[in-house]
Image (cartoon, rainbow, N blue to C red; front, side):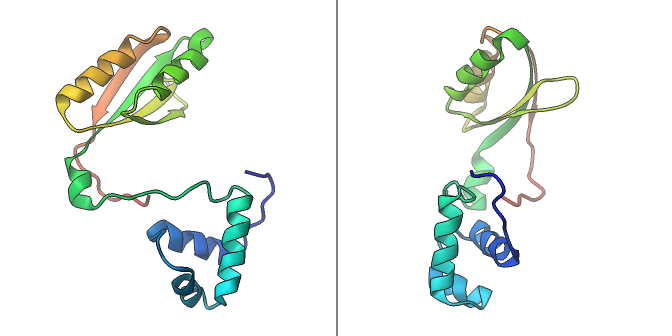
Length: 148
């Protein structure tokens, strides 16, 4: 993304609508924003070209999401092996995201899988990565709300 991209209120409204439903037509977006369709097309083009919009994705319905097990795993990592650990985590398809965090641990990995056996295998794989010194995991029991 280019630095110093200026977003006005209409850009923020447009992004909010797309977060709710990225499949809305440009005509529907224009109606919601009270602008011409060509204005929406131009704004979308600019937001895509500047990297503000990095992509579009599928959001699963709540019944499907309820069946997916989610685990938040905090990791302590040997600082000399940090890049190699992140590369290894990137190769594990069940690891959906990794964040650098403050506090007693170094990173937070978000893991999604269909079964507890799969979660167990993923956690074993993470624990065996050279440079991972310690992990602490929590299974998500329920989602109270999710703005994604």
